[in-house]
Image (cartoon, rainbow, N blue to C red):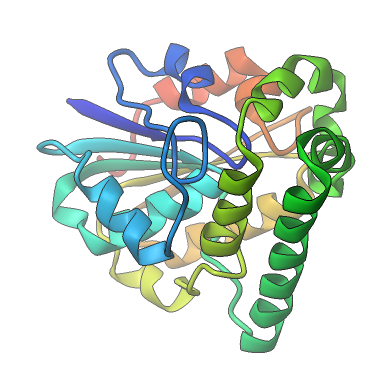
Length: 232
């Protein structure tokens, strides 16, 4: 079975490859050597070209949001869907517009202030508080991206640019495994809600970690991936 791995914002898929033998892990738009992001829909078009046969699709954070959208677009090409620290979007249009402005403001900051100042700010993001012990390890990866690229990813692929998929979850018939860190209260709650709406979903909450279980508790994360599927 082929596998496609989608990384999170400021990351790259290579850090996730040890968990997925033989998987494809492309740089997402605006990251690494990839071209700038141009739109949410264009990113999905590009990623659809990486689906070969029936694919196990994994996404983390921003990658999880894209993976969910891709599975909704082409469920017949997905064998199993694994979402780590993901969300189906922001339902309220006003809240989504506010988030879009925040994403755009942060994109402007990246372009105006440069990568070092952005990364220093990003390390202090409340959602990423549990990752501070790994800041030195993650910093070179985060600094390796182009400011214009990351800015384009925020503007085009940020949560504010993502459509809300909450109303679409009930029609996604593929098996879905949701993974969240227990200390990541916001995303654990989102995962619980998604599990209730997805027809064939299971939720694994990993204790003693936050937004990035694969980094914070890699052995527990690997066990979560390897657990038998109840809805396969």
